Amino acid sequence: PPPPPPPPPAPPGAKNVLLLVADDLRPNLHLGYDKSFMQTPNMDKLAASSLVFTRAYVQQQVCSPSRNSFMSGRRPDQTKTWNFIDDFRGIGANWTSMPQYFKNHGYQVYGTGKLYHPNKPANNDLPLSWTDYSNGEDLANKSCNNGHAQYEQHTNASIGQGSEWKRIVACEENDGEYLLTAAAIRFLVQATNGSDPRPFFLGMGHHRPHLPWISPSRFIDQYGDPRQYPLATHQTYPASAASIQWHPWFDQVVKTDVEPAVKQFFLRRGYYGAVSYTDYHFGLMLDALDASGHAPNTVVLLTGDHGWHLGERNMWEKKGLDELDCHVPFMVRVPWLKGGSSGLRTPSLAEQVDMMP
Image 1: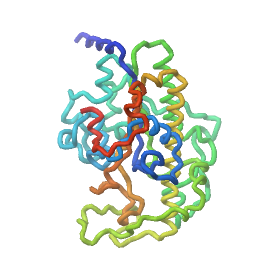
Image 2: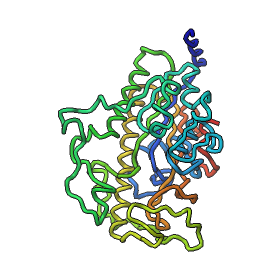
Image 3: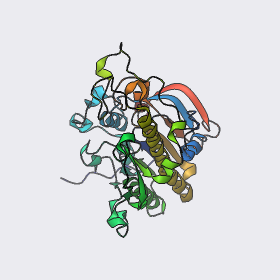
Image 4: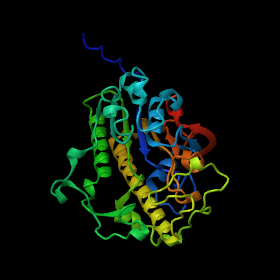
């Protein structure tokens, strides 16, 4: 058969789009969400020039169903994706995804990292959703630890060190998070160097702060003694709550298995460090956008795929149905709407399917 016709050109004056997605990121941010102890300067800076939705929620509090939902603009009841088995292409082979919509309307469309859940859809939905996609493996520095990040050797299982959290001590440039950011910046340069006049849609999805909480030392150690930060107020799972909503965490077997307080302190610090590490990479991407000269005509949207518990109600998971499972950060910067969104917060309800209604 003859090849399909090329997509029509983008409409005159079409703007660019930068989508930033984190994994397991509850609204543990300083500016916009009032967590003043968090070290998130780059997301704080973005929040100061964005409209911040303080009550934004996912459609399902599990990675793959959530991402299949907001990347397709359809709820799980439509995608039939409630687990890690199916994806929306199984029922909607001819559906148009969010990045695909831009691709079909004259945009160059690039993705890196975890935007869809891995292999859901297959091959990150190439070629339907993307002009190109990369995780940056080719950018590894082979002269440093043979192309791999180097981790601390000391571990202490009693505080979760080594299994749940650990430090990167050398060859940070070979960590997967660093590589996917480098790939995203490479795509940005490619999209804005003048070789292709089309506007761009660029998505960058980071795996942190998903477990294990692996971060360079400086992001963990900047929080100091973890015992200075409070633990969850409610340490036990409510006796009156449905058992099906409680999800065990690693060595937990029954609902009364509460982690020792000293371990909880270090686990929570591990999560905070991973959030700060993600913030650093979002900052690298936003700085590159500024340097490109295209920030004034680029929409920036930042969110996560679902929330996370840090010992609240004796859970260290998502997958339940309460606020911490479903609540996510959600901010949108539209630079040309002067005063319309800059630094404002709204309690209006927002859903992730609102990204592609």
